Image (cartoon, rainbow over all chains, first blue to last red):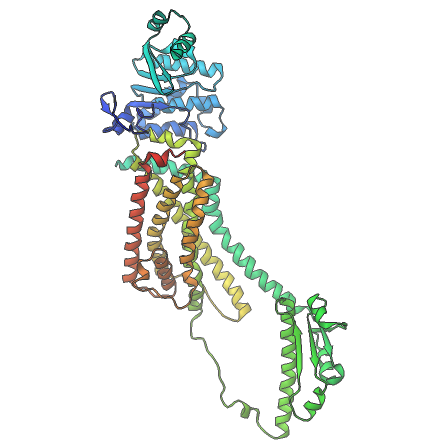
Length: 195
Length: 398
């Protein structure tokens, strides 16, 4: 995921995101993606609004469209209540919402989300899952990593099972069920990893 | 490099930095308050304590009173002394029960009468200010007495006192008050400007690199469309701004404080000095401040970018600070002058050029050369900083 986000360079090989090479056109790749992981923190001394606006400006958006987009995204994620509060005053769930807003503000076509619901309460977690679902329905490509199997069941078209840094299998949930004769993704995961 | 994006990064970093209490303290509070507290506190305290010690009668013991009854009586009469009796005068001085003791030799009075030279020994503790002051008072008193004896002996022989002093030596300081002020300021100010340009840059440099690593925000910005070069430039300009502001504030505060403080010290030491920095000297300070701040900012950014945490960065920077402080102190050294060699040595060159400028000597050739050479070092250092921002092993050092 870090390689695709261009924050790390591959030792060999390359990849393309929306037709842009991660080695030769990292700037263009970064404009097309929204990347979120547990390592992408937020500036504690800035407000939610300032952070989201900052990243919108960095992606080259015009001031008028920034305002519109920020209002829209704050509304969708229900962030207006704490928009002008500094990050270090916010709860984990609020911070994660700001991170999602930061990832989505430039309306990227590709979303790379590394465990976006980690450590969140059920309600915040559900609102984030719903938001990802709606992004998917809008035709965005979402790459989503999780340890919570029912999230993968709920969201993913294609599921890659990764164990010890290697992809063991990639297929749809239906195909996994057919292959393993198991219904639950937890059981499917354990079976494939055990093989 | 997209300059618009550099501007966005710069303004965000400035906003973030100005909300950091540590940076605000080192950027505004320290340069403004350090000098008044240090100089008024120090010189004021010295003047106050010395005056207090001088006003208070010195506790003195006289040994051999019978040997010099007249002189003993004179000392008794003098309000500056309080005569005390002790069994062991040396111990009494050590234990601070008395400040000093004077011992008149057995044949004191006889020798004075015979018009010979008599001996008086003053015992005191030089490491004790009060004792040192008491010694001075005793010596002055004895000199007065000596003077009256000399006058008496000369009068007896009908000799004019001027016979003893065929050459009347006087020294007259032709330096104006302003020059004296400039001389004092020329020692302190270069060092202070350089030091504050460094300490001003320190906190933001650490905060915007190692601090961001610690908070996990560095990776957030790395996945944004901003390039590493734009990021390095925006951060560098922010650190440099803080460094320049700190040094300018320090210069103003030092100029104002020194003007008042030296006047206070001047009244104490007898030297008259007036501090006023000429406009042209301020121009020179600003010209040379820019490249040296740029050099410090980029070096500090590089060092702290390498560190994994705020604490680690601080421990890397401490030896670096010593490397800057030592050459900056060259302005205190008498007789060291700016030459072709020093003009190329970073920090030393700026320190000496600022010293010259504050003394009213403007060698524009050297100033230009120092500006260019320091700017070249700074450019190289900025280049290194930018390269470090492109290195994964530095950014993601674990």
